[in-house]
Length: 167
Image (cartoon, rainbow, N blue to C red; front, side, top):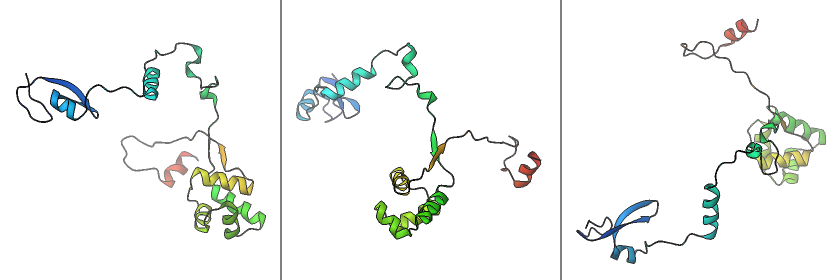
């Protein structure tokens, strides 16, 4: 005999039931009124849960994507650092103003101007720029080197530090 954590009834028989993401001790009356009894698992959820409980594969395909290609060999692309200049140059080469480009892309002039100024838009807008202007805004990612001066120093790198290091 225990106390029901839901209604506060004292010295009643309780059982552990799930309510939301927590488990509580509830009396039979609360279980019945609040419909806290065991529930059927939805078919899609049951399938997802069974997929997570599969044992890990020890085969050579464990690090491969769905199509069997090694996902670590995939070349990553990143947005070019000069994407705004590329867009501006391509627009001017076609002889279009901001309004014309905006109409052809179904975007506002403000988005065109902000992107040309260097503000990164959504990937969807970037794809529109590439399609409409016939340009590529993505480049193969390159490894960047990071230099740390001194772990004990709390200041960042200055131009003087850079020139001293690279001369």
